[in-house]
Image 1 (tube, rainbow, N blue to C red):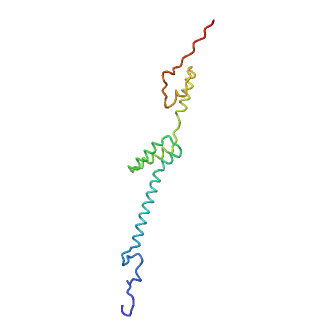
Image 2: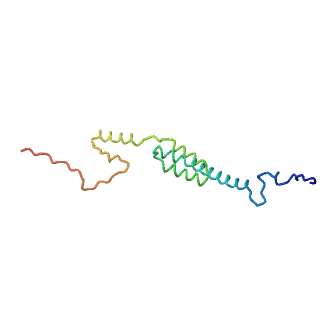
Length: 144
């Protein structure tokens, strides 16, 4: 370093990612914010994907919405993918309606047997009738 030449490690030749003399580390600061942002994005993506079966069941007004929700919640807490797959299958599969044809058959058979069934006789939530509403048949007319 005679003759006024710069040393190869002089300040003009140090790359920007090396810590400056005042202690500021731009690369470390960038990586902290990048890592935190990446963790947040992965978390949002994970929970969005995890809620897929519930959103599928909710949009189609699925009858087993609570079962799908419980399976997805169990999958979330146990990290067992089988529960999540079951939730997707249940949400995507529409179970056939066996109750309506059976009610229709029961009503037809009751009519053939001579009964007059009402719609509430075959309802899934039976309504109790009060004893004061007993049906009485009119007395036959007497001939004069």
